[in-house]
Length: 308
Ligand code: FE
Ligand code: FE
Ligand code: ZN
Image 1 (cartoon, helix red, strand yellow):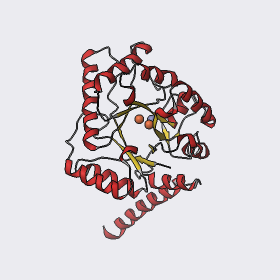
Image 2 (cartoon, helix red, strand yellow):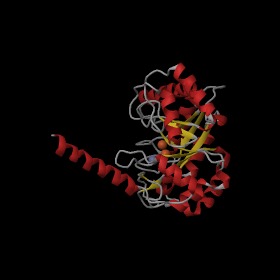
Image 3 (cartoon, rainbow, N blue to C red):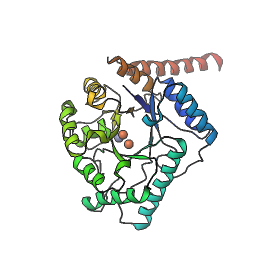
Image 4 (cartoon, protein in one colour):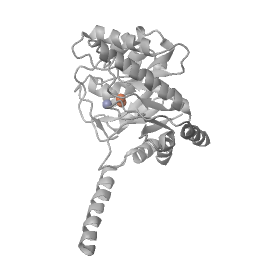
């Protein structure tokens, strides 16, 4: 079955209800969100009433909670343990995020492995595993999904081998998984036209059953650019056909696919992108956004002409 959705926003007043309603309005059957700003540690409390109501709406609309995703904030960096105080702060913050996931009943948490900065790479990979070992607890109902990164700057986790090392050194192996990202894999140096070769290698080294989520993004950059700039579906260097082949690859059936493509003129592209993915047929959609936007400006100017 196809589980397709996008990144959506989570706000203080509507919380999970707002998330579910946005996803439904995009005709999505899964979603991903941050439980607060992804650059800061400010977090508002989770409202149990809103959460219960949201679960009910999900149930009524056949959205399966096990297929929905939360993304941890970017600031958590388990790969650099050179400053003991900071490292401990990130672990504690991750623990808090895990508690928020559990309170929201969404148990898949995507985490960037982080940047090693000055620490040697093998030490950094070990530091990620150690951080996870400290943040996780026996019996906890949570899956941490380590994201495959593009290798921008000093990011770790941009090869299958590096991810394998992280997974090998975690204690709670049943709680740590992988989240792929098509833009990141492209930017890290793999040609996605040979995605089955990538999957073969992944399967042999880690196991396809470890993939719990796939971010579907086109890329603004060429293979191996180590840039990490997402592009709308069909408008980048990966291309529509290749992305469709990945989305519908039978080996990845039932794995939630999440769009993290950029907004166009401040408008969400997700409803349109989900539609063309379901149709498996590319239509130029950016220009309609531009036309809408420009007409709005014209209307606005006309209004000024007549009323002012
Ligand atoms: Fe991410
Ligand atoms: Fe991603
Ligand atoms: Zn990215």
